[in-house]
Amino acid sequence: MNSRKTNRIGIAVVEHQRQFLIGVRPAGVALAGFHEFPGGKCQPEESTEACAVRECKEETGLEVIAINELLYEEHSYDHADVKLHFWLCRPAQLPSDLTTCNLQGFHWFPVESLPELQFPEANARLIDLLVSAFSVS
Ligand SMILES: Nc1nc2c([nH]c(=O)n2[C@@H]2O[C@H](COP(=O)(O)OP(=O)(O)OP(=O)(O)O)[C@@H](O)[C@H]2O)c(=O)[nH]1
Image (tube, rainbow, N blue to C red; front, side, top):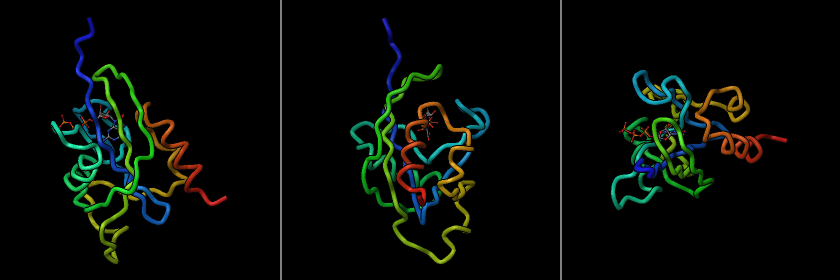
């Protein structure tokens, strides 16, 4: 019998002028060193949308508004089974120094650079989607 718990995860895919807010998973956690969008496990009864907004604020200090769910992905890693809800988000306010201000180790990456970054396996379809939706043709 498979007794592994499946975690509901809310992820904030924060876009500003075709750039995305991305960090690197710290040492000592699963998938350390991989790039990631802000996000984490949902609390009991918490919607994935509220979770994405909350985790973004906790991890980056940035207040965001969720716009729509871009993608839902189920994945089994060695460390966990996850149900990933990727939410397109935008900054709630636009301070003049948005792209240079301290975002607790997260940085803005132009959409064109996303395929060169190393994301967890379950992000592959999301990256394809972002590149086709946000690149200038
Ligand atoms: N934040 C984030 N997690 C991702 C992404 N892609 C992806 O597969 N994941 C997976 O989603 C899960 C997120 O859980 P987490 O462990 O970071 O969440 P958390 O901060 O609430 O956990 P903790 O408080 O137990 O440390 C991990 O299994 C992680 O590998 C992503 O782009 N961003």
